[in-house]
Length: 302
Ligand code: URA
Figure (cartoon, rainbow, N blue to C red):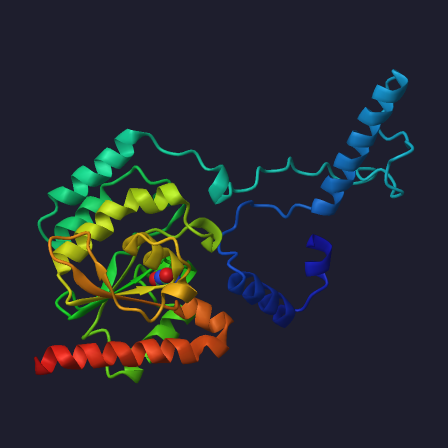
């Protein structure tokens, strides 16, 4: 990769960087480029040596060709020693689940917040969620907290992490057009996410991350007191409505969000990021938006 990028012009390098950014590669992990081809050749050789050693009982010198070694020359010959491989970022399924104290802390901090600014401060002071350590900013909310309708997405992406506001990247631009299509804008809608910190590489939040943040989003809804809640996508819909159905089954059906004192009419719908990947499904989202518009108009006319 390092040699390849040296041969590229500025425009090609810029295009490559944009490609990485669009693919969710948002952070540099190392100061120096690492040639993974060299590394994997060395790993294959070392495995082959071990296998040969086990079979014959005789030690095999490093660099000596073995029956199973790849046909390339010894990868390190004549080259600078490759940097040590860095452990890849853990996947959601490999993360360490925090202890009960972190969950207890989340519940206590959320319950103690008596206003939306207090809730924001409480989240800022909550250290129990691993995501806050890799994120650049806390992405709390945007729009009008007194609006009739509150939209809840999944978690911030790269652009949201940089700007500290929800739905400001490509999905956010589509989200704004969706609002506009039914006569709304951010002065007439309140927007937040289930999770206020960007998961590294935009991975799906782990179950324990969702559960750690649940007291905060539930308190957020209770403090904002919207007349309607719209859940954008699978994570928000399934978690807040306590359903194990997928979003394509849930979407478009009005339900009650019941975690607060009073049930609130809730509409699960498709996430704008999903619509960017599957534009043909926009017709389903459009049907949901029209249904939302009817409900909102009904609120105004009593
Ligand atoms: N996707 C989300 O769910 N939320 C954001 O804020 C941005 C993208």
